Every structure is written in structure tokens, then in C-alpha cells.
Length: 308
Image (cartoon, one colour):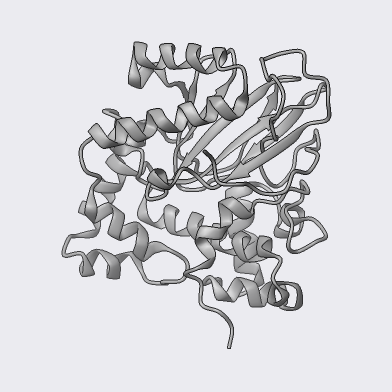
């Protein structure tokens, strides 16, 4: 069973400041033949995955297709278009834009930074900014899993099967690098600290920390810190709480560690290719594509200090 997800909104077939996310599923969802407007459903993951997975999603692409902008999140994603091989989207250092197949049904799992490492024999650095067939990492089992997803008949069943598979693999996998897990926690936007300070607190050198990040996360600690800071800002803007509606952009930015609005704009352009205004649209509490990403951003909000 999946935790109920965010509200369903029509997906817009254009390049936007956020990914075009998934759709609700109720009828037979075999790949192809889908001619309704695109929809999405972003959900919290299975409870057994919440230590490793930030969100899961289902997408139904409109009959005329769509263009999707993937934003850096610091983590790896597994994506499966039903009827196609499962693919892995490596950690991103900038936005990646791609067209989506008209009428496609897509499911996905987005991991927290470093959480996929126990499931891969390949250093994360080799996957950075790459899209590869999952079969390159998991072999024939990924091919068989893709066939099972295609035969499941419904996207919600396929997503449950994909999550069950990841749960099973994580239970058999080596323990995640605890130092990396702690470093990620200290790099979150509500704990602003210099990378050198974090390395010292963890009793390793900066170069040692970078090597651990190459293996487990795929980006440098500084790049991850920038990425998480932007994700923290988007979380506040997406929340739609009263304070998010009344605070200025600079106030929201300051709460996650930006020194001023130009700092936010510079890093947003660097990571997403668009300005914060374009990214969020005219409504500060919704992304520019009109989607509700509460399931994805909610885990960030608990740690960000509230204004006095």
C-alpha cells in the first residue's frame, strides 16, 4: 500500500522549472493508448524506504507528449516507462531537459543523496549527469523486473513492485557509509557550515571527504551543499504555509542560508538554468508547472528553523 500522495493537477506539456511529475492511476494502465491530459501523483515512499528514498511518483504523459526539466536533488533516481527498460538517472549537477513519449506511463523512485550506493558496485561519480539502463548495474534481474512492471497492468501495482524490489535489495545490501550519511545531514540547509568545518568535525581531511563523496554520492560536498540549499528554498516556497505567502523571497532565501537575493538567483541559474521567479511561477508556493510537490519537499521542512 502506498501513502496517499499530493493532489492531482494537469501536467503542462512545456519546459518548466520543475519536473513534469506523475499521474494518478485507477484503470488499466498498459503502456500506450492513453489519450487523456497528462497527470501526476507524487507520494511518500513505503515506510521501509523512508530512510533511503525521498519520494516515489507515477506519471501519465499527455497524448501530445511533454517536455520535462529534471532538477538536481543530490540523489539518484530509478525511472521506468512501462514497456521500456528501467533506467537510472545519476546525480545531476545542472538541469536536464528531455522530451517525454506521448501517452507514456512512467513510475519512479528518488533516493536521498548517497542512499543508492549500497545497491551499486559502480562509484556514483561514474553516474553523475548520466542516464544509463539499470541492467548495466543489476544485470538480467533488471531486465526481468522491467518485464514484470510492464505485465503488472496498473501503474500503482508497478510502483509497489518496484518499491518491494528496492526494499528487498536494501535488506541484502551492505550497510550504507555512516560517515557519508552524517555528512549529508550536516550539509542540510538548516545546518549551515563550511565543508572544511564538517570534515574536521568528522575527523577526516577535506580530500578524504571528497573521495568518499565520489564513491557514494557522485558530487563534491560543496556541490551537494548548493543543491540541498536550493531544495530547502523550494521546500519553503512549495509549502504554501501562511508565512511562505507573506515573507519576501529574500526572507525565505535567508532561512536556508542564502546571503541575499542575488546569491539565490546565481545558484538557481547555475543549478536549474532558470531564475527563481521562472522556477516557481507567479505563485510563490507552487512551482512554475502548477504541480504540488508536497510529498517530495515535506521531509525538508521539519528541519528548517521557523521564523520567530
